[in-house]
Length: 435
Image 1 (cartoon, rainbow, N blue to C red):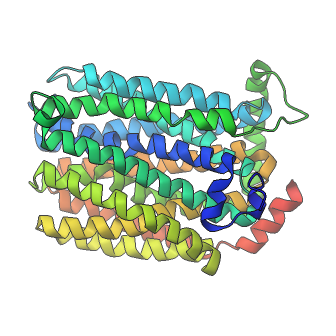
Image 2: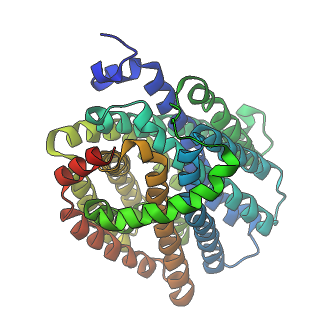
Image 3: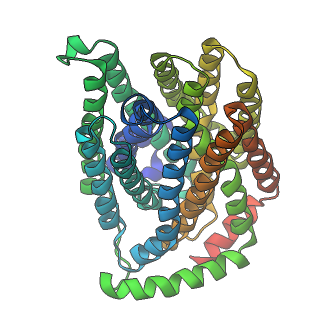
């Protein structure tokens, strides 16, 4: 087998291609932010260190607003940046800029003092913007490393390595928090705060292979970056018009908008939800750690499931599990149940995300990947505005975190009904015609 040709690779063998492995390693690196910071230690540390003087319901509201604001910024930027990057052959350049923003702001959290909740939220918002915006260009580069017939497997390997990489660093950070003296720290708080700096370094280190090894073929009609700004705005308008006419893409994006809201909200608010139920912080991060390591093999399995039954059907299976999990979580009252839910979520979370990315890549023109993935990420982040904000508002108004969780069911059910109507073969035919 020629290891430089991903078309010849299958299963584990796809990682022998240097381009595929380097692309997937970025997920290994940046997933540390999603796990250690976004889902794990930031919401926990925010309540116990930066916002100790703030009432629990109010701090939940603040965290929800911060997540929503960061997502709103990405909503505005995503499609415009995607269009510009396609025009100027600049996907990797934009990825570097936003990844460095995320890395710098994550590192800055290490220096935020006790009680400085506004400063902590500000750094978190900027880091989240960097993380989310960089993912636009990372997602779009999949078409440069994988042929259509391997998109499900390659996408799933990216998410699976993300789970493993994020889980490895998260395990280290949890160990530092549990046994700070063994790592030379004076307290669990010192160890936790050092975890933010360590996450930034991890993210930076594992971004380097993508920068070196993943190609970005130059378009013959590419233009200078500054000219691409104006062209990008014009292209944005044109792309939106195309998406409205491409019924398959349009319906899929609406479906994705709804169900990924539920997925992202659970990722971002699970620790806060458990803390509101008075579960111990160490037990909560342990549950999240379980999710990461279950997610590693499960995401790979979903890649093969997508090849066997189709990406759409695989996503629908995952959504059904999420609906059951949400109903259970509303009524749970023990940490043991939280652990069981963590395992269950780990089985489907990466699979839903990976198959969504690969399914979308199948039904869009490959030459306009960054532009179309700009809309994809825009809708994903627009959904992430609503979910955390709804949970925060309902929690603030009712004082019941359980009631705030019920709204997510509407999103999962609505997304599944729309996804059922997506005609994938028709979408693939239209994508090939437009290339």
